[in-house]
Image 1: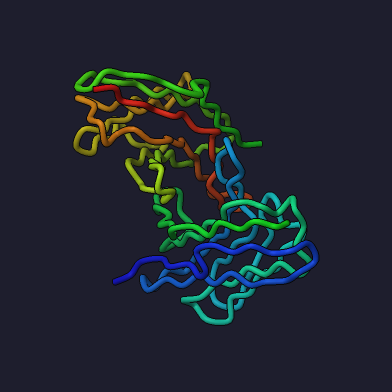
Image 2: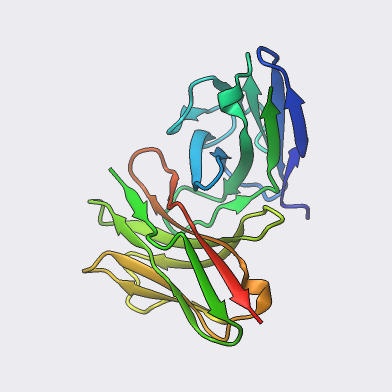
Length: 114
Length: 115
């Protein structure tokens, strides 16, 4: 039982390049989330999904796209990376959307855009 | 709008002492959950404790307890008998049902335990 895994762990991009971050969970969770964490700040929600085939915007969605083609996977895409997207990206999942459902986090992906 | 405020950017505590990390929240939703996460220097987010808005008793998990004062909209984390391994960033977060179904995080408190 690996929990929530993220690929890759580190990545350096040049401005304008594209990339996809992969999140996978083996807990059969319905809800999945992508957050970003900037230095000295808490996490902010980028996009989320309430089930296979669904996605929705979070607090800071601009410049990102997501897809949830399979229940266990949630992909985060950057079409044209910008230095402002340098951050640590966390994926999370939870069983449901109730207030008492704990979110389980992946180990994070550190992205640098030059 | 929902908001979490952590007013202590950093705290320094002697080993074995108890420590209280402050968290206040703002929401008009009657149903919400409050979470505390620990983020060590390795970067992962570790769930510590949860308190529901309708829970009558304060949550406890081992050395962690949550001092929930609903009228004051505060949810302080208390760590008893602190250990060197408790040195980390601590985040308070709130989750509501309405809206974006998201966790709203505070800015965090960096706790340093001195030997």
